[in-house]
Length: 289
Length: 266
Image (cartoon, rainbow over all chains, first blue to last red; front, side, top):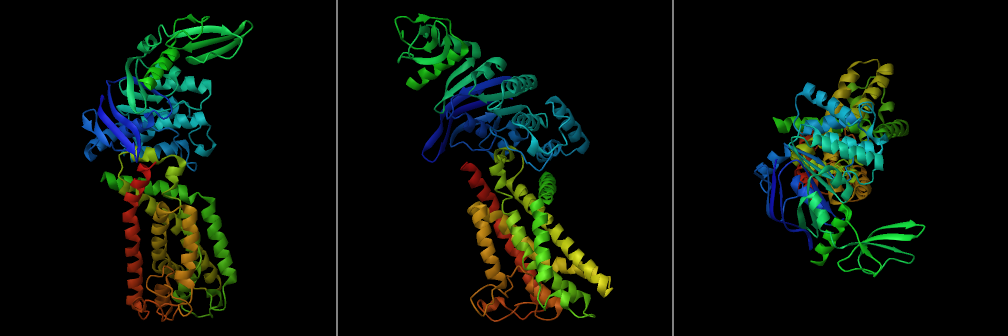
């Protein structure tokens, strides 16, 4: 299910969250990177039909989200995991999924129950299925969230910051789960964690200030930091020039890695950039541009 | 058909979630016990032997209606607002279900979940009365009193309790609701202009008066808005029930746009 966005604007009063955004998402697993406040969540909510665009067009699988019929057509084939999804504490995991399944229009009771069982199994919650959701950990809640998103076998899955706040093991588990479900459908993963995109997506868009500043293969982001990534070993504070990406304290001093268009210090040496440095270079260029 | 099925699904789950709330049962039990043991000489426990069962159970229904709806209004006040508080509003908006079906389901689920303990209280009262009046017809009249006296008021309270917190906040609504309840149902209209004794009283004063054959509380008593205070009787009771049910519709009709406005501002 392809997504075509042209000139998308979304404002909240005087605040512009999306500012003439253009983006094409072909299919498969697609990343959406950006800092907090870049407009990712607003874009996700527009794509899920939760928010109407202020201006511009959004077509998902050929359906125009500005119309009610188009929105409904997309929502029937959509799985959405919102940022900070809450759950009804008084329901069990199985009941919650049953409720969402019914609202998604899965009227065949036997088929719905079978699918819920399979999804609970897939997210590793089969044993916890009869337990009330109020006792679930953050990671378990997130897995219930992805299970509900997958109910009805959606062609488009939109997941907003799914790994934020999870411990490293849960994060890896969740990432793997997302990569698994991407086969045969479009999965749009919004995150500010570069590593999540690096490990799961071939292509990504990078957003800042309500606009897309990069759209292409994840590997190409690294190129943006070539020639502008430096390493410096020093005893004092980091140099004032550039953006410090990492600082590791070792016996010979603190090893700084920086992104800077100019050599930040006479002792700094150019190094091969990482994806994270490519992202920082991109964001820095976006902020200055 | 899909809309009906979705409304039914919301009703079922809303009922399930609500009926499991301990606060609903604790509130009902506490208020029912307080009312049972604090009723005055005019209360149903003091009705003489031989009193017709219809009068006995109408009297019980009216007694319980004095305070139980306050508890139900409190409990229902967060049903539409809590989806947003719990972080479920975005998910619900993304599902292919209209807001109308969602609101209708929440209303019906909330209403039935409060109707169950209210009906149970009346059945327990009927059982208690049957033990010493030895008239099984009391159960049948408990059902009639529930439908005519209790249910219309509950339908009215549930609609406002569901929707008003979208305009204010649930805690503020609860405070205002308690004030309204005493002013609009129990304040003697002779003392202060109030809705007490009018057709708009959700207490069930008119239907109870009709069933009891004598003025139950203030139905038809002289006061403010005299045109809403007809002489009690069958027609007035039907009019009171119809008015309460009709008045439940406007807040429910407003719920969808209010919910939309609220979710868009998030």
